[in-house]
Picture 1 (cartoon, rainbow, N blue to C red):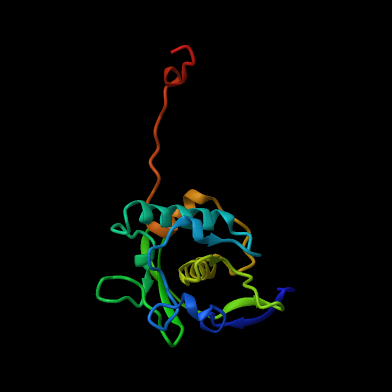
Picture 2 (cartoon, rainbow, N blue to C red):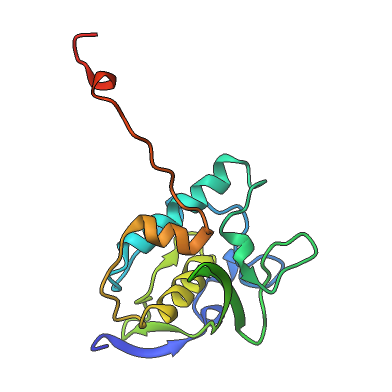
Length: 173
């Protein structure tokens, strides 16, 4: 909070050459490489977010397990920019999907840089999902978590458990 100068809307800070059809891009053709962490200590959340985004990339964006959780959406289920700055992010909490209402006011420092996570490609999906997740978990003063729990909350996917046998690791074979 000592570094916080203001809460600002991304449309006022993202270069217009990164806009799509004159509006900020929410989440077209995402990938895990664009997830950038800043001041918030939520690396496990961002790791899970990057894994989910990279899954979308590997499926050529046919299986959208993270970006389809941001509303409003167009007729194809892709998140779209809301001029009022209000969004719903769907997260899996306590055994069911819940909509978390957020706005797009994000923390900025005195140099005009984001204090929250962001997309290196100027998209809003990283910041919006992070804000919704942190809203459910006590705010930007986050104490940390673990990636499997975070992935479960972001996607509803519970990692599978495999029992490995010692002979699977025999170096003499």
